[in-house]
Amino acid sequence: MGTLSEQARQIRNAYQREYRRRNPEKLKRYMIEYWERKAALYTTEERAKDLSSQGYTQREISTLLKISLGAVNKLLNKE
Image (cartoon, rainbow, N blue to C red; front, side, top):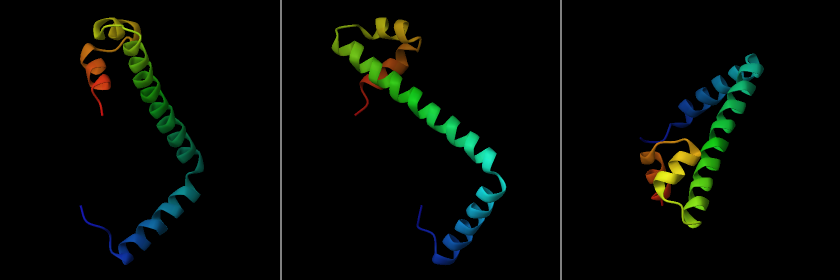
């Protein structure tokens, strides 16, 4: 995907400023939900890595964290 032209960028920025001005509560709620999802993912990934370093198997980690075995595999092999 290429970069936006200067005119397109200005139009986008103006639209976003107007949207933020009109919908402060909606934007606030969106940001809270966004960062809560990010925090949950980060926490799960860090916990999985910590448990793995303590010697737990992937199956035990999936049971403890209540996530699928495939999700644990992805988290531990992510680099």
